[in-house]
Amino acid sequence: MLLRFHVLLEILGTLFFVVAFIMGLIYCLAERSLKNRQLGGRLLSRISSLSAVDRFNTRSLYAGFVSYTLGIIVAVGWIITTPIIVWSNELISKIVIALFVWLVVLATIIVKHRHRLSARQTALASITGFISVIVVYGTVVYFVAGI
Image 1 (spheres, rainbow, N blue to C red):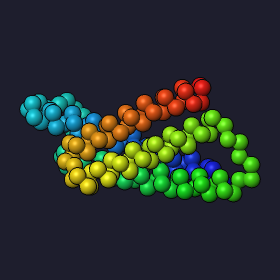
Image 2: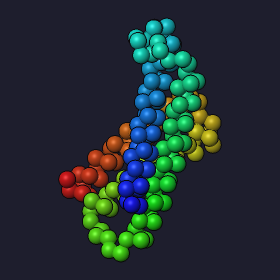
Image 3: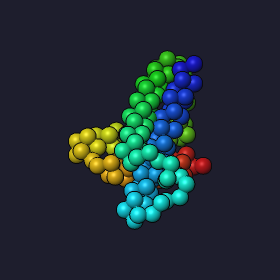
Image 4: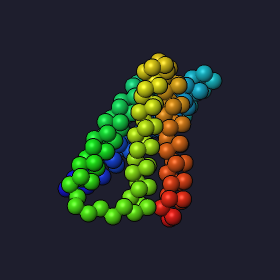
């Protein structure tokens, strides 16, 4: 039961991080469109405001962080209560990836508040963080898991 709840929380956290990435892309595209005085097509014309996209991006980061944190806590509970765990490369790679994603989201949130990032900088941080997660995921899966 704990394992299923953990997986659900981690998937939810990942979805929130994907949403933050998409909102970051939308923000950058809409801002560029406004600066160039272009209409930006159907998608960008439906955006109510850049500040709304920024708020959605930030809330997605927070929700993803909370979900990942709870998922990690539940995973620790699962590890403690499970009598025998086979520590395979696959399990270790999943732990490494989950902790890396959690650290990336945490770093993005801390930098946003400590350095008072602008909406554009937050969007770029979301995009960069997501890309770094994908690169690390590919690296870990390739080298550690041997898949």
